[in-house]
Image 1 (tube, rainbow, N blue to C red):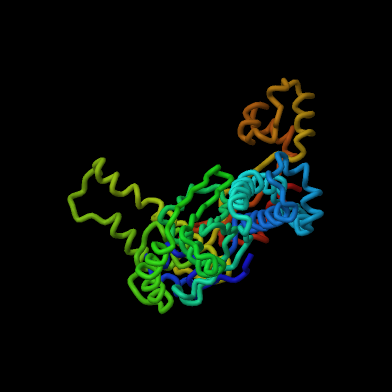
Image 2 (image 1 turned 45 degrees about the horizontal axis):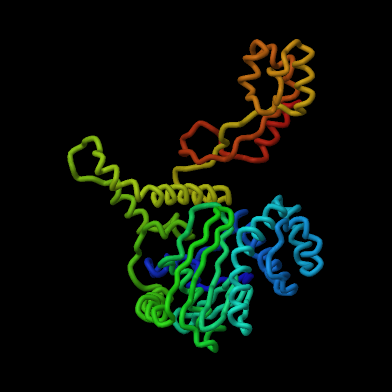
Length: 406
């Protein structure tokens, strides 16, 4: 997996093809990772190891129970052992990743490869193949998860491990760029006539494909991609907000997106209730607006948490929570007090308020179970500067919670 990204990365193609100046705007901002991205990286590495394993063994079919063959996999692909160890450290379920990738991704590609090999003994399967797009997109490159080439045909695969929204490969610029890169790279010497681009989402049990002729893909690249990529690389063009803003790093500070939301909510008509038609017109924009407001709030909180200032705003401690410690001990106390098993079973799943009512009030609860209650500091929250709550101090919040337990 590459650890650097092009300014005009294929994964962001929908955005920079539509909103050409956004690429340069994003490039000036730091990249952020997430647990979802880290889990996806592990899944891609597992997929790479498994495909190399099957290529090494030359098996006709994949295993029915991949977990029972883990020792065999890891013996041939030692990286799997380190991936399993890192999952344990980082809190990811390695077995789930292994089985999901194997059954939902490898088991999709491998039959295609077996059929291609049967039709053409000279067929090739390339795994994690870097592709160069610089003929059409300045300084751009990417990585195709898998490529099968046989008999003037090419299949290009992309693994998406997330469990978000199903993605179609039809008219998908990211997939078309991966296909174009494969065509310009390894496919150049095979006189490819047709390319099938496939997105595999194993956690959603979704597979989507688009098949294009070589000539149609090149026409699209020349007519649509190359002119837009040239403007995007130069930071030129008009800002065009829309659903493609979802993963843009600049959206929290983007004036064009601010104006977009203002246009959606502004009206020059008489004050009135929105009609069904008005609601229908607004609904498609809500995801973009909600994503923008969340990004602005998160950006402001990051600035304040880092010691910066947002005029008129501060961070305060949000609502604290309480929970029962030592669930077994709490159940024993309730049992000895004469309560029925149905009352004290799974104490940890019952709220403090519910338990307080159960035992007969706050005084009785504090006497019976108060020593088992832990108060957890509230998470930081954004508030106006005149909010009476003190400015958030995580060290002070933790100390106060600790003292309350004493």
